[in-house]
Length: 442
Image 1 (cartoon, rainbow, N blue to C red):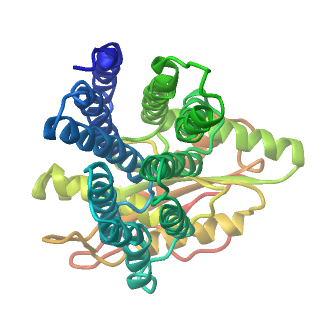
Image 2: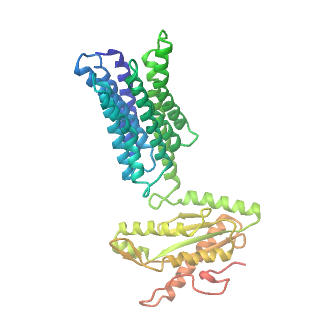
Image 3: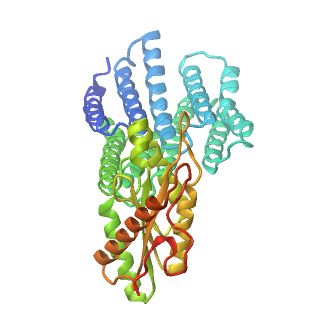
């Protein structure tokens, strides 16, 4: 038994437990894949307990340990791929797992014919290249071609060194492991381009992890008298584990902040964020001497739809309306859900009363046609109140009151003028000072 790895196994086991505890509070697909990867690392250390055994048992332990180490890296790499839900991405993962496991098995078993290694080595290039070329018309990504380039280089490297009489297969295996973990470093660098401790520690940890498979063999060949404890070579693993835990915590904090400022149903800014953005928009308009507009939109007949068809259909209506409204305004503008069936739109400078009236009219027009919600088709309408800064009000509260009163005025006149079996909406055609059912304050 190789008892020297027992402390590492215990440490990785504790880190995996801590990771599982954090991941349980962050139930995402990525956290589950990362947890699976760390279970592979634990299997790697557990297998290495038996590598000193004679015969097939020791060989099997080496194969399982090295394969688990490569599987962990490939899972980490795949989890950070933004297009991992693509079918071709899954095929890339499966084929790389097969290629790595096959080569590790053949390189570890003594007396394997040289021709079998010559066949296995090109698979590192052939498998990813076939996936990339067969799907290039449907899907293409620079990151995918980076993976193809890495494994093509690995295939060439293995073919050049694997038959060296003294260090051939060992160097080839080091090349396999280096490629896996430098790939992790590249993928995490692309996926987590943010200035946080978690991102920096994880990327640096993967870089150090990959470097172990270069520095270790070089020291063994050129500085054989220098002894480095095994725990030093395993240190990058712990760095990566800590970095990943920090990434999960950072994502959870960011998610909580998002929930605090956004509506959980539609994903739009909630009233708290809306008020902050409106205050900022008015302050910018004051400094620049420009205009800003506020539109308050109330859905007509939403309560009837909700009562007749259920809250589930009502939620679908709100989500569809949020999507429609967001698609109508500029990225610099804000669409917020500020009530049960009330939406507020902030139009930033450059804007004018005419622009606001045009947007208001378009929002009503978006809801003229019935909304197809799959099994149900519903018809609603909208009433819009518009107030423009600074003509209608100079302070935020007064502007909100003006827009709110005009919205209710438009709704009341729309309901009062509605005839049986005939659909009416707010924003009737009037002169420029009463358009959209609004009484403009001069």
